[in-house]
Amino acid sequence: MLGPLVGVLDHPIWREAVARDLTEAGYDVTAVIGEGAQAIRVAPAARPDVVVLDLQLPDLPGVEVVRQLIAIDPAIRVLMLSASADQQDVLDALKAGALGYLVKSTKPADLVKAVAGTAAGEPVFTVGTAGLVLGEYRRLAAVPAKPADTPSLTARETEVLRLVAMGHSYKQIAERLVVSHRTVQNHVQNSLGKLHLHDRVELTRYAIEQGFAQDT
Image 1 (tube, rainbow, N blue to C red):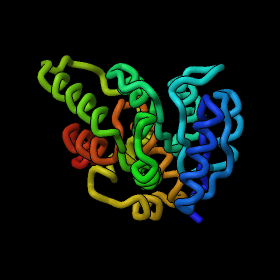
Image 2: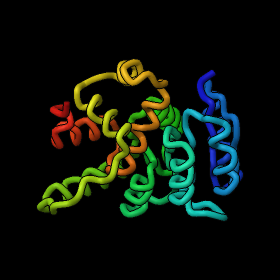
Image 3: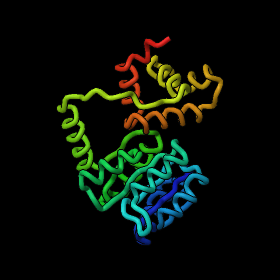
Image 4: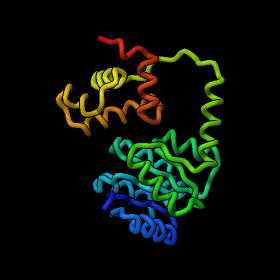
């Protein structure tokens, strides 16, 4: 069995379909629920590999659920599943901490692949939404950067960032700092959130550009 997974979807039909497709693919779907508040209570305790989360829920916006889940456990990986392919919805979800974004018209086989990618920490997008994200990055890259203060990282987050910039693996960092692998992951996730970055590749690039690899 692969997993565990938690599904948070607004409509019973979608909950049933997603649970069926992922279970048939060999995933351990531990919970399928329909409200954001319930997800915030259940998901952190379930310690899922992935939370498949609807953008539109009856009680809370999916984006707010992402924020609260990440605040509780920065290691939680969220894959958004929505009927909307609107650029702002996609970007808001990513800014809140979602790792990927699929539209509900996605084929079951592609959903299964997306969940596997999300579980591995890879950003995953429907083809159309990937274009939106790329377009936004290109737009931002064309805008001259404004001077800004470096976001406030803790001493330990800074140390982990320095070691990431130097090319150390999470395992090597954990051994060097005498902490668990999960603790290193949590520090990385916290840094990603503070720096508004999406994955380790972006974090490494940022650390090198900011000279962390040269720190002593």
